[in-house]
Length: 382
Image 1: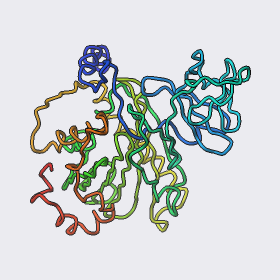
Image 2 (image 1 turned 90 degrees about the horizontal axis):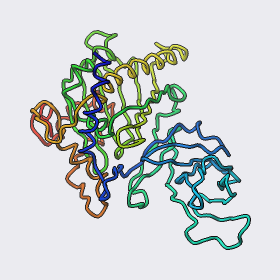
Image 3 (image 1 turned 90 degrees about the vertical axis):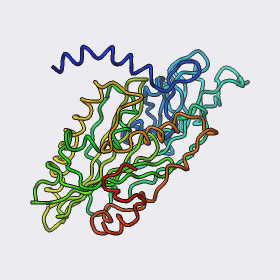
Image 4 (image 1 turned 135 degrees about the vertical axis):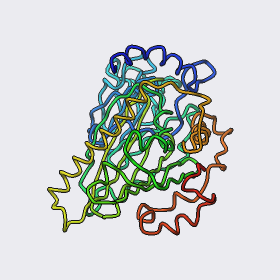
C-alpha cells in the first residue's frame, strides 16, 4: 500500500501547490520568522557551508570572531557560488574573482579595482545562535527581526543530559501541515496513543501552543495510572519547545523541534531531546541510555505524522467538529507570517496560558483551570 500511495502522490502535490501562499508574481511566499538552518557544530570557523532554503542557496560561515553570518550565495558580479569561497577573518571571498564581502553582504574589496560598484552587494540575513542551533531570519520585506526566542534554561542545566539526542529528516510537505499539528488534538489518541483528559490552547501574539495532560500508552506507561503532562510552545512559524513530565516524577524530557522550507513542497526538520531523572533512581549512564531510547520513541511517533503529511490533501475549507481543536483559528494565526507587516494584527490571539510552567500543570491544576475564560475549557476548542 505504501508504494501505491507514493506513486499516486504527484496529483495530490499539484493540488496542494494551488493553495499555498504566493507572492504577486506567482512565486511561493515563505514565512516571516526565525528558521533553523543547522546545528551549531555544523558551522566551523573559516569553513563556508551551502544551505538550500527558501527556494534559493544560502552561504553560511563562521568568522574568526565565532559569529555565524548568512547571505545569498550567488555573487552579484558573475553569479559564482560564494559558499565555495574562502573565509578571510570575518569576511567571505568569492572563489571566482576574489571579490570579498562582509557580514552585511556588502562588497568591501575587489583586488583589481579600487572603486567598488554601488550595487556590489548581496542580501544578508540576521542570524541567531541559541541552544546549539543556528537560525536565520527570513522576511520577504527584508525587515529587521520583530520577535525574539529565549534560549532554554534547561539546556546544559544541572541534572539534564548534556547536548541533544538529535536527528534531521527531509519531508515532502508544506510547513503549514507541521504547524497545524500543534492544535490538532483529535489525532493524539489514534496516531500517538495519547488519551488526553484536558487540552488547553496557548495564544500570545506570534506564539501559540498547547497545554495538556492525560494517559499516554507509550511515554507514561511504566507506572500504573501515571499521567503525562505536556507544554508545547511555538515561537513564530518554525521553532518549537515541548516540555513533558509525569505524575510519578520518574522522567522529565524537553524536546526541540524546528523546520525550514527547502522549496514550496519540501522542508528540513530537526528534532532534539534532553532528559532529566531522579538521580536516586537513575545513574548518569542509565539516564543517557534513557534519553537515547526516548528520542527513538519520539522519532517513531513523529514518523507516524510524517506518513500522513506526505500523502494528505490540504483542505482550505475542512469539515470540522467540536473535538478537533481550534484548527480554523490556528490557520488565521498562521497567516500573519505570510502577510506584510503593516497588515498584521495579532492582538486577537492572546490568552495567559503561556505563563503556566510544565510543573504548574501537574502541581497547580486547579489554579490553571480556574483561569480559563471558557467554562468547560477541558473540552471546548477556544
